[in-house]
Amino acid sequence: MEAHAYDLRAEVDDAQWVEQIKSDYTAAKLDDADRALCDYAFKLTRTPAAVTDDDVAGLRELGFDDRAINDAAQVIAFFNYINRIADGLGVDPEPGRPQACSS
Image (cartoon, rainbow, N blue to C red; front, side, top):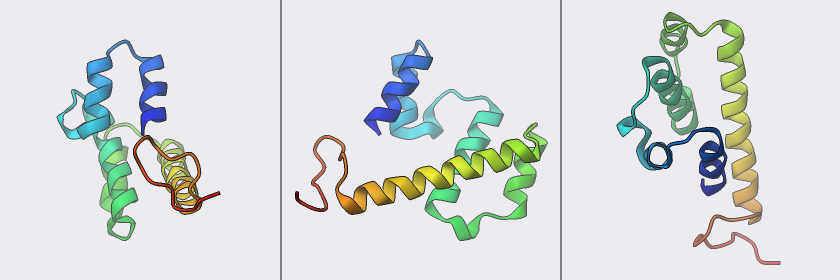
């Protein structure tokens, strides 16, 4: 998470906002489209079987076209996949987290 927050800090000039996103995006100041995208990412990550056509329709109502929704789903799924690989192999853990495997 720290690496992602670092990257976001490089894109925006508001460290406090980045910390809000990192700790609880629901408390951060986001427009409706960004909040909906974060909600979609959270749901796809935590409970993928619960994602429905209504979730996608909600993104469309906020201006996301099918390509943007597909791109978002692909990126979310990729990060979920690669994080599980990294965690499962003990690759580059975040500070303070134990490694799954020892070298």
